[in-house]
Length: 496
Ligand code: PLP
Image (cartoon, rainbow, N blue to C red):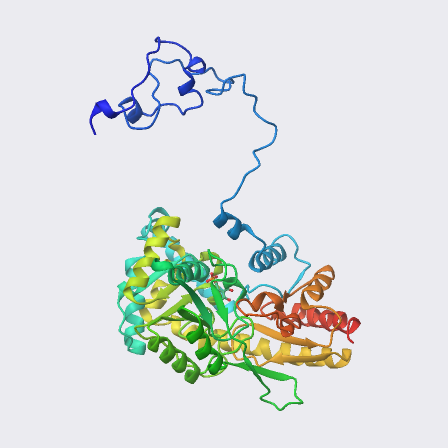
């Protein structure tokens, strides 16, 4: 660019205070060195201009008073979408308060993992090892990682997946994110929304209810389509145990009707603890392949890690599958570490998102678990520690629920608990919605999550969504038991 095209400083007497600059200069920032050298678009002030005296209002003339309150800020349409009321914000606010400033709340709400003593001891030991090994500790805190993740971590994980499951993946197929939550924000907005030629693609959830954290992640309205489940009664129609299954006819119909960019499901499913069978996954995978779209499997609780599953289920990946993992439910949500195993183009796109949104991810989680990924020990934590721990909790909670609801005379049922750490209650014939019940329970210091939030993407307001309540069983036994007693007591007050 020639100097003649640059905006030149106007004539000014040396030593003239900045406040009395020409109108074009009022309110502009102090000049940088580059600006004095004539960079484009910035109004320049000669270096001889006097610096405003300390305590003065700097560049703002006295005639423009500073208002006592800030401006009435207006948000863009995207900003409005991201700041509108959301279930996940309520849930995380409830959870965060209960875990910090309101310890008297019975926290049956959000998905905080339990403190599992055996794993806590391992995390502490490993942290001590990092501290003692000064260089690794310094590097962990002092360096930015590449946006797609720590190269040694990516390599170790790719090798582990290759040698254990025979998946054809390399480091280029893996991307680290700030928790699984940010991975989904990237993936959904990458694969659905407005496309060239005016097309609008959507994400298809084959089985509602689905994870509350997805519900508000679309930058555009109407990004999601979901299918009603088949409700089955594995213990017989008169039992209190039900199980949702995928209605494949509905899924196929949705694939014909809508322009779908990806099929997505959590496995185990949050909120229900349902684990899609290997057969269901294979069928979804075949459908996705036939439509030339990816299948996204959210493995926040499942295999290969953290492995909180009480029924047999194989980890699954294929070249059109996007598998997401996380360190959170292993017991490390504070490290905010999500992992995406995907086609190279997707993994690289996630790295690009990370660079733009946050430069890099936290390296703490990756460094903490690195030796266990290299050795493969990370695959043992589920079967040896987490599965028995959470399965025992799940069984105990189911027995207390049965006791409490039967005693209270409430019309109740519970989804089969096959993994994760929730129970999904179906409370029928109440005179209030589950959202109202949640509010009454919160007033009695019991946190739950109302069912309404989990049924996004359905075409109509299915009455069933007002009859369900998700409870977490990760907290200590007395908290879960007392919480269940209060839920049954409150529900009984509103029984028809
Ligand atoms: N997916 C599911 C099904 C979840 O339940 C959660 C958290 O509860 C996440 C993803 C996101 O977890 P994180 O961002 O902590 O990895």
